[in-house]
Image (cartoon, rainbow, N blue to C red; front, side, top):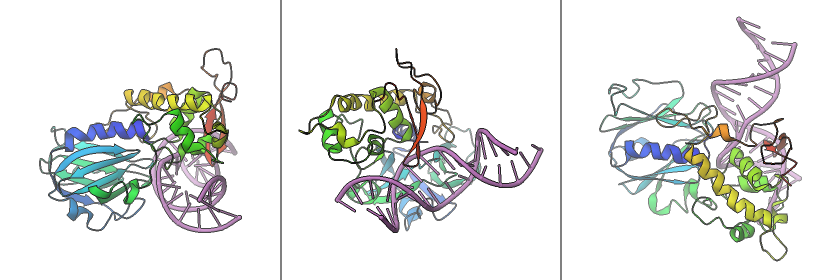
Length: 290
DNA sequence: ATTGAGTCCTGAAGGC
DNA sequence: TGCCTTCAGGACTCAA
């Protein structure tokens, strides 16, 4: 399931195929994903040249020469595949190699096809004027970007102070920190040695200063994300890079999916447990995560 | 206002 | 083998 490292990996895969290229036509196989495609979606994209591809949290932002930005979210099961540019798939009709759950095809003027596939349809596409993407649309209200270098302990303390939710729920809240999902929250809490059940606000001292636990989290979150990014993300179920290859970080999980296994922290000796928190699986080591 | 529960969706996995 | 149930979870809506 694409979280920040997976989305960033996909963004990097799309750049060489799309930046500087012109969209010839867009074909939709249905009217909606999680939400309807915006009005005039295909018409507003046709003939436009891609000027750049950025990322915000789990969103991919494709800037166009029209002044609009195409906002892409992969949900749980979304993926892109690139066809045609290198001759692997012959150019031709839009759906030449159509697969089940292909919902949108972006055909470029060089006959490359960027195909969006999403079995669960939790994904999202929107078209927003680039000038207002931070205040209108899906990106409005997103919290701290965890790899921008702004994730310091004092900053985290400000964000968590007074919160009566668990630290697990707080780290999953995209309005606080944007880009983490269930996997990397579990991993970051394991790395930091913090129990997912502690109240977020209780990690902040009465004077507003960060506790040692917040300090460790501020270090662990970017560390875990960068490690995953280097590995090309984690491949579980539907995640694949744009070239179809798989990331490998799932082999380095320390907590997620390891219920009943020995904790691999040096000298810990605990056992990873699975519990349900806010309707989601939480994996942690009760021995060293306190 | 803040927080938590329910909802959407399909495919994989497990039970019998 | 095959049918059935359960689970996965990002972001949204709704209610307490």
